[in-house]
Structures are given as C-alpha cells and as structure tokens.
Image (cartoon, rainbow, N blue to C red; front, side, top):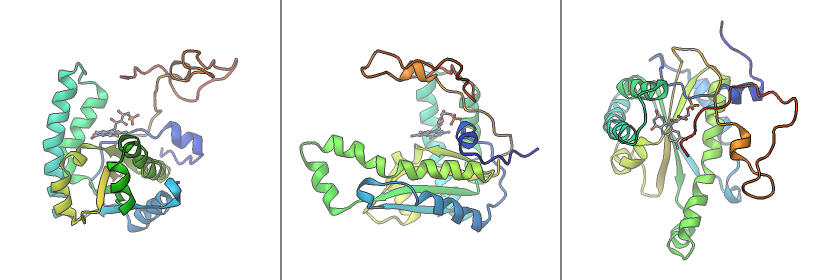
Amino acid sequence: MADNNTDLFHVMYTCRSMRRLKPDPVPDELIYQILDAAVRAPSGGGVQAWRFVVATDPAIRQQIGAIYQRGWDIAEKNYLDAGAKMDGNMRAARYLSDHIAEVPVMLFACLRKRGIHAKRLAGPNGIDFARLLGGSIFPAVQNILLACRALGLGATLTGVTCQYEDEVRKILALPDTITTYGMITIGYPIGKFGPVARVPVEEVVWKNQYGTPLQRPAGYVSPAPVGKDGKG
Ligand SMILES: Cc1cc2nc3c(=O)[nH]c(=O)nc-3n(C[C@H](O)[C@H](O)[C@H](O)COP(=O)(O)O)c2cc1C
C-alpha cells in the first residue's frame, strides 16, 4: 500500500535516497510544485540567487548520464579503496549510475554568482565566505527532497557532476555566472520508502561545551532507527 502520510516529521524520517527509479515521466505539475517549494527556502540576505535547471530531454539526460557514470566509477573506486564495503547504499548508488540516463528528471541546483562574491572570495576570509555560499542553496535542495518524498517521488542529491562543471555547462547552456551545487535525480520509486537510520543525537550533539553529550530525555523514543555508523 502506498505511504501517503505527509506529516512533516514522518516525511523527514523516511526521506532517504531513492536511487532505483522507474523511467516513467513525472507530470509537469509535480515538477512545478517541487520547485515552488524549493523557492520558499531561506537564503543569505534573502537574495534568492538560486537558479534551477530541470532536464527531462532524453538527449540531454544521455549526455549528463555519460558524465555521471564516468564520475561515479571514480567515486566508487575511491570509496572502496578507502575501505567502504559494497553494502546496500553502495549497491543502490551503483544501480543509479548504471541506469542514470533512464532517470526521468535531473534537477540541477545552482547559484548565480554576484559581483560582490568575486571580491569577497578573493578577500582575506574567502574560504569562510565560500563555505557560507552553499548555505544559500542547500535549504532549497532539502525542500526539494522533502517535497519529492511528500509527493511519493524518489529523489537523491548527487554531487558527482559538480566535478565536471565545464562539460555540464556546455550541455545545459549555463552562463559563466552560474555554478552548480548538485543534481537531484527524481522519478517514481521502484521500491518502498523506509526509515532513515542515523547516528543518534547523543553521539553528535554537545550541551554548552563540546564533549558533554546532550542526553536523551527519559521516555523519548525515536521514530526511526538509530545507530548507523557515521563515517565522520
Ligand atoms: C553533498 C552530497 C552529495 C551526494 N552525492 C551523491 C552521489 O553523487 N551519488 C549518490 O548516489 N548519492 C549521493 N549522495 C547521497 C548520500 O550518499 C546519501 O544521502 C547518504 O548515503 C545517506 O543515505 P540516505 O539518504 O539513503 O539516508 C550525496 C549526498 C550529499 C549530501
């Protein structure tokens, strides 16, 4: 039975990367609705310098897919060389790469560079500023992931194509002022949504000063499994 529960916390706790997707097209109304949710996100100074490219054209998806596959082959090797196992997550990522050109919607989340950015990036705190810039697009990306989940669409944020930006730029006709921050693959899932497992709060949250864990209140039961190994 389809899971139609759109309670915000249920959506957040079941919004995992869905990489096995049907090739069926996603209706334009849903794509628009997802992007209407994206542009409700906060951005630094309220500037809304985000720009999005929705790629559904098969010829474009084919070309992006070829870049993605090349990139994923390298990324996968790097993960395995670093000791990662070919677990469920890695197998799903391999599946996405093998079937990438069949993904019906490739949504690129971008930021428009502003004149002031170049100056600040070149300045003494340029690295800090670069870190801040992503903060003006990833809240919109998370809105996209949550909107997809709420609408029953599978989605995954991917970073591979950012490393081949010059090639992507040509395919998508991106002006020089536009930088990509990620590609979100979207389609109807083959499998079912399930709970997101994460390292528990008390292992990653400190109270007042780093080192004193924030304790779980007595009686609090997490709605989703905890204990998944983080790699950090
Ligand atoms: C910045 C970023 C880049 C990512 N890039 C990729 C990617 O290139 N390919 C992929 O299959 N998944 C990618 N992911 C998805 C993560 O692997 C995934 O969110 C993580 O393993 C947790 O799994 P879950 O989302 O199913 O809970 C990326 C996630 C983030 C946040």
